[in-house]
Image (cartoon, rainbow, N blue to C red; front, side, top):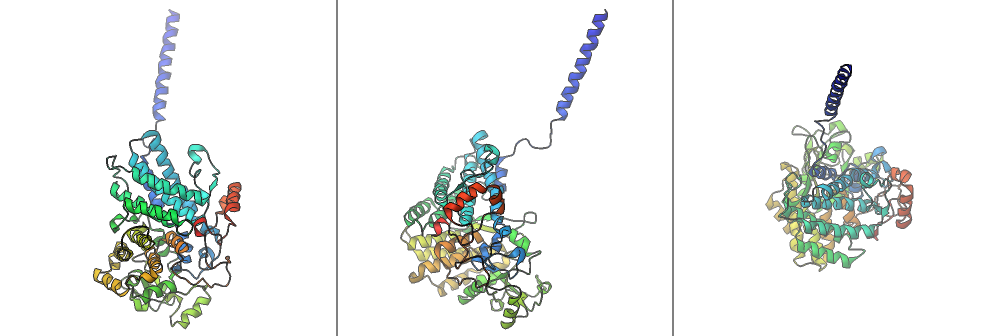
Amino acid sequence: MKKLFTYGILAFSLTIVTSCEDDLAELNVNEIDPTAVNPAFLLNSAILGTSFPVSTLVYDIGIVQQIISPNSGVLTGANYNQDNRNSTQGLWQDYFRTVIRNTRDVIRRIDADEPDRNNLKQMARIIQAFAFMVLTDAYGDIPFSEAGMAFPDQILLPGYDDQQAIYAELIQEIEEATIALDQAGVVETSDILYEGNIDQWKKLGYSLLLRAGMRLTKVDPGTAAQVAQRAFQGGVMNANDDNMIIRHDANYNNNYGRLLNATEANNFYLTEPFIDFLKNTNDPRLSAIAVTYVGAASGPEQIPGPDGNGSNDPATQVGMPMGHDNNSIVGVAADLGLTSFYEFAQADRTRVVKQDAPMFLITASQTQLLLAEAAERGWITGSPADYYNAGVRAHMEQMSLYDAASTIPSATIDTYLNNNPFSAGTALEQINDQYWIASFLNGPEAFANFRRSGFPNLTPNPFPSQDISGDFIRRLTYPNSEISVNTENVNVAIARQGPDNLDTRIWWDQ
């Protein structure tokens, strides 16, 4: 009897312990945090991450002489043609940490768990190719085949691929991904670019393919022609509805707009070459882009808004000359009859660089202008003049997408095109001058096309103390973090490509 009682107590105790363990197991289950993430959200994060960082304002946009600052310190860059690695690393860190990491993850997850979401995978491949192109155009040789593999494959110190090999793979990747997009596949309606519209994704892919092909015009014109033909035949962007646009809002700001509406509102100015180019052709985009704070003697006297002193009148816009610091520019402003250097023209921060302004990464305007060049070179069919006119018109119409106050009437566009007709004698220069304007606020693309085409014909920055021996910056330098941590692979790239400085030319810019 005593044994039966003992066994009973033991059985009861085990029941209690088991019950407690079950309860504890349930308590350890987090019913709030997700155990899996929809890869569409990762793709959207990657897309948002392609919005250019402030460093491209300090370097790329300054190199092509559209916006410049006379100030040094953290703003040192293209204004003095000096190497400021706190800024040259900005694009590298943003794109590798956000865009490449997330697109790699999307592709890996779909291959492993959701193979039916083929369209989402191809979208990720296109965005990833865009990001890699921006990176290699900026730095030259970069981690490519091993980039973004730290988590899945424990590749913490990726090797650097040479740019020629990168471009060959990018062209193949873009073309394969674009062809693989399937109208009959799963529709990814949560996609923030095109809401899953496959026609528009295909136009994006072929427009990116065209851009990649045209990059090779100096170094490999035969391949450039073939790739341009295939992109053209596939079907590229021909309307602003097709543009690759990053749409910003009050929560997710345009990086340029956030900077220029805060600490640096009074420190960046439109350049003399850019303003004069627009003035000389009576370009209506000048009044859509620029503002002058008439009579401003200081930063606080630049007063935006309807009750302020901002003027969009083209006659009041004076661009800041290149080659000055915040001391020498004072005398220059006085010689030009300005109240102070605060009266130089700026990009209008209530319109084109407001905090929620969209950012245009690949556009119908750029695409049509590339078609104009391809047609002028005899690589595709069609009239170069027609493509040229379509490209200029598309960019002028694009102005309204920044803000209704920047809208250019259709009749005004007609007048401009009639007064500035396409000329076969200067076709390549004219096309690429317009590409420069059409890439305003898209610094990486403007910088890349300037190196590729040689246009516009800019005068080198005359600042007296520079870190370059040539006329213009040709690439950005590697981040110090890469040099100190991934030393061996960086040194291999430097030995192959050339010194890690602002003078070294990348492969397609020979």
